[in-house]
Amino acid sequence: MLGAAEFAIPYYIIIATAKDGIPDGFAGIMTTIYLIAKVIIAPIAGRIGDQFSPIVTLGVSCVFGVFSAMLAITAPNWQVTVLMYIFLAFATNGIYTAQSAAPIVYSQNKHVSIYSAIVSLLCAPLYILVSFGGAAIANFFSYNIMFGLALIVYGTGVVLSVRFSRKC
Image (cartoon, rainbow, N blue to C red; front, side, top):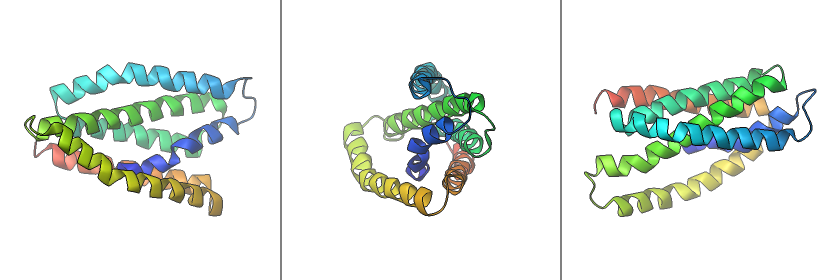
């Protein structure tokens, strides 16, 4: 489901670079910030998953996704888009961490590689479809509608992860 929110990822940089007064090399700066934020969040997301569960990691990551999508819609200047990009890095890396850990936790460490491969094979066509969907939404409607849909998907991820984390 969260793959549906990831159709917006390529468009965050477009929103950021469309702001007035951006410094030279801004896209490179944003890429560096994104990568540093991913490095910072990786051990934190892993710790949350170890201490609680991958579902809690997923929920926390979706909260960051909600904030990044909200900032994509409302950011008044390029400085705020830096925070948007940090939140996006936290969201994407945390979701990836939860996806990686879930087969280990929920399969009692049996057949992990098979479960991971099956999930990846089932999700790959959906990622392709949502990528085209994101492009179509941005082209025919607006970036704000696309980020609004991402916000809804991330928000649904928060609600579901809270609901299911109580059962774990």
